[in-house]
Length: 224
Image (cartoon, rainbow, N blue to C red):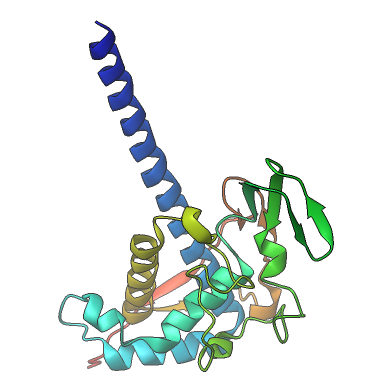
């Protein structure tokens, strides 16, 4: 009975962990896509450049695979810049394994530490024009979000870095490439790009405070 009970609990725990993983991944992916579209609509130059690349590289008449996505350098920079300004999680909670000192601050062992990922991504000491959405900053930069560059840690770092980076990014890049390939986008009610409201709402992820409403017009590469 004891073994059976343990197996049942283990199975239940694994199911819950799987559900948490899928739920968290789905929400962060959707949130990142919404922020990317918001920033591109607010910055028409970026939208035009990303859309031109997508429509130059991708073929409307066939399915898109990973090989195609790897050719979209500017779109990848758009995603990176979105993650810099709008990380999926604003605060990262960790615990120190041993006593240490960081920038003159002594941190005891077994102490909970809150890392402000949102603020790090906007720190003017490390980012030129930190508040500006400028994907080009990543073109000639080796800075990446895989945990080695601590000025850019939207997924955390070290051994506890987010395990869903690769599938999450693939989902974001694929969704954005499809949205830019098949539709032209504009804001409703003659809202000007600079008037788009960008307030944030804190929760499991940093979402838009207000839903993003857009007008989509199907793109026809072969007009009559």
